[in-house]
Image 1 (cartoon, rainbow, N blue to C red):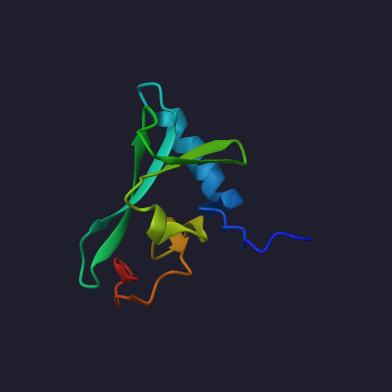
Image 2 (cartoon, rainbow, N blue to C red):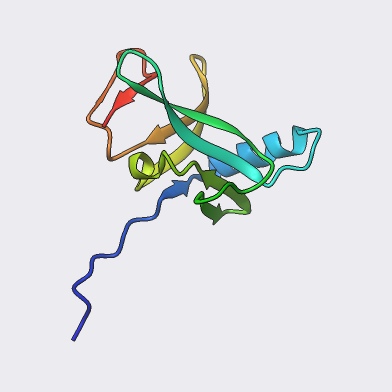
Length: 117
């Protein structure tokens, strides 16, 4: 008989554009970098915002996503907020930066800087 347990979705998927940008950022670092760390912090009018920073080493309990030749570490406090999200990179006339398509978001502020789950 088949298993009745439902498989957990990937913590994070990465688009080709995001992978390319991660590689570019890592190449610009003046010290050895393992990858980029993604997390959330209390901020903004909706309550939380995403952050992306250099990761020199893996912290305890961090989830590691290796895809398209890059390594993304997910801050343990953010894992439950990010499960199933897609990390993309957008560059147009109005903005440039990483954007997250997060199925856990219940609302997002008008400026797009913060969200609620």
